[in-house]
Amino acid sequence: MLFDSFDLVSALATLAACLVSMALLLAVSQQLWQLRWTATRDKNCKLPMPKGSMGFPFIGETCHWLLPVFAKVFSHEALESYLPKIQQVIQESLRVWSSNPEPINVYRESQRLSFTMAVRVLLGFRASEEEMRHLFSTFQDFVDNLFSLPIDLPFSGYRKGIRARDTLQKSIEKAIREKPLCSQGKDYSDALDILMESAKENGSELTMQELKESTIELIFAAFATTASASTSLIMQLLRHPTVLERLREELRARGLLHNGCLCPEQELRLDTIVSLKYLDCVIKEVLRLFTPVSGAYRTAMQTFELDGVQIPKGWSVMYSIRDTHDTAAVFKDVDAFDPDRFSQERGEDKEGRFHYLPFGGGVRSCLGKQLATLFLRILAIELASTSRFELATRQFPRVVTVPVVHPVDGLKVKFYGLDSNQNEIMAKSEELLGATV
Image (cartoon, rainbow, N blue to C red; front, top):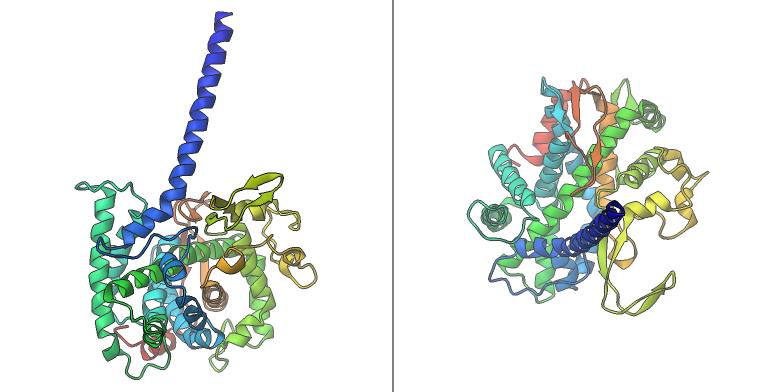
């Protein structure tokens, strides 16, 4: 009897501990993005704390007039102008990966690739290779300590993050001040160009501090999630060689692939990329199974009822993208990697509005989703047409979901030589981006 009582007390204590742990976990997770906001802001910054948004808090919450501005940044015309620059950044990265005699850490190198794309293409900053390495290392320190407890002590993660932020802001301020001098002869307007010009047109010229902070937001938005999705794409192409071969078949059928390399006379255009239906299915399936971000918070604008439960106005609500994809009845055999589920014949994602939402849903869906999918499509085309790669470990690594989806070991892959146009690719890269870009 005494033993039974002890078991009951022990069980109740365990239950209480679990409930307390869950409550603490919910409270902490709800404040993580607010710590991100305070970590990226200078102490003198007067911008108000935003509510209910996980992405672009500065752009989406503080300066509402900037939302139509960023519609220009990610418009069809803007994406068309970014395309050759993105392609060259990807080609150059693949050239570096394949020249490495040792296997690379795909997740780490994908972070470097997405960072380079954001800095060079989206923001139009000019920097030498040495400066880029320093910027990336500093930004990595910033991201690694972004969600540290806000305890400002020597050697604390928070102090390291603040120090990295300050170093980043100094470099960004230098790049912003030099930007007008570096824009001569540039054939497109990048996101920062449009941001600064539109601010002047609206009579709300941004201060240097606001520009630095919005720039870090832009880099952050393009960094972790794109690297996560890029790594997942490469891992799935390794797992499913038949999918990779079907991608190549589609490129051949469209005249883009000949003798194992991209046809140089067939310049990639946005309309051509969008028309590649199987490629679109592959990217969608990668984002369904391996959505980089698990969910987000929103604030209830009015009281509503969901499954018999009343949610009062003003409450914070968390929605789960990953659970939605896992439990949506429209998807058959949800654990299988099956790009054909998105084909015209099956169209499993067409059976409801909010069953498939890798970029969120409604008016607060990701502002940069078109740019992100374009990046992934170009990466897939380059991988299918110019690269040979294989897993460097005995088995595929386990995937974890915090802070974003990524393999525990980063995914070790050996890349081999690019196609016969390797030297031409390098020359075009320098011509388009400039030797110090």
